[in-house]
Length: 385
Image 1 (cartoon, rainbow, N blue to C red):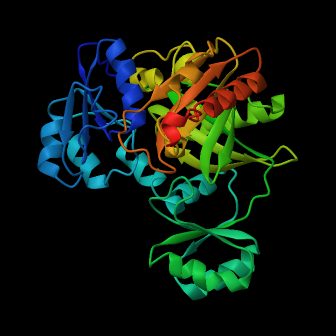
Image 2 (cartoon, rainbow, N blue to C red):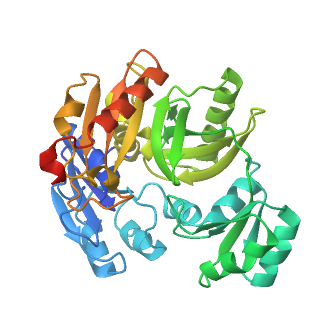
Image 3 (cartoon, rainbow, N blue to C red):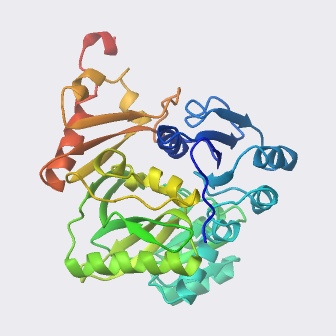
């Protein structure tokens, strides 16, 4: 049975980025207090939270003090050291469990878990030496992709190997890190299932979301995805079974590659709310962030019904390249909503915010957010002098 954490309680959050910011907004709407813990200050989450602790994840004294000040702990950032989670768990429930984070923060452990439990993954090999890489490339064939086992996101820590000539440079780029070699997947599109599971095993999902990337970073997502009923059912069932097998509590995203013949392959897991689920913030009865709150607090999961088809477009620091974006231009579109994360420095490739839109179809919503983003580019002389 679940332990219920009622409003006016304090939720602890490891991590302090935009995911924690949107979680904190939802938590405060429902009357909860939020205490965020990370090595930074004046963070996207900290600007909204009631309390912001700035300390390293390896400062276990601060971690234990933090854990004693909250009623439950969750995450918006999965690369928290196991020792940090263990220290917090001495005093308070932590969701999702530390062993789940341990699995998902390392590609080798994650793919081994998925493969050993019968979930569809691309063929892979564990790489620890140059000779082992040569053997693995010969076994899997080219092209293939070499990825660091830990701390990779948005395409970081990856090298594509198209021939044997690329092997030495790809191995050198690892700088001694443990790695995974994956067979290349010729996919038609990328999709995801954002879902939630509570402490009693109840499951809720937002259907299948379609994702378009640019330079390995998510660019536009829309829902419902343009997939067959069979693919939809298969994707949701895989996500449900993964969450059940893990004994997961909270919001989870399962990312898939979809081949032209309708076959799904799990690309990776995100043990938290996900960029592709941001559109739920405006388009659904219950957002992915509120579901995370409900799950970790032992409340019933909310409805995942969409009011209308929806889309999301990321706003990277590149949008600021020619000066302050033209926010008024985007605001003239009544079905478009702006979310900024409170980050001061707009760097190229840095996620600064996003736009969402609702429309009569997912295609129309995707078109709207792209038009709104294009309209942000400064067009007046005052911005370009």
